[in-house]
Length: 128
Image (cartoon, rainbow, N blue to C red):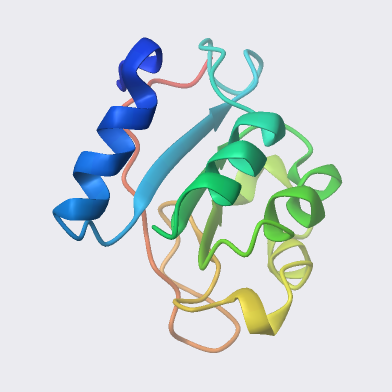
């Protein structure tokens, strides 16, 4: 979504819904873990309220444990974090309610997940 035309986002969402897009990938960047700043909880909340397309949230942020419950509350079926940003990444993933893990929460570049079914995201934005 970071490449979307935000001045025409409503129309773009309508087009994606008409095309039956599987999910909307949203990169959350804090300017610390990666040098870019991007979208946040308010954008995700608004987007979740306006579309039935599931949100696929990728947290490229420091201290993800503080934010996982916020992003998980949007009913996002996929939530990713970078294991090196958390002291206990597997505990961090447990902050995502099991009911929200469809597919399960996952770690970026890490094949292991507590239930053995995690997904991986390959980052193309270079970290700081």
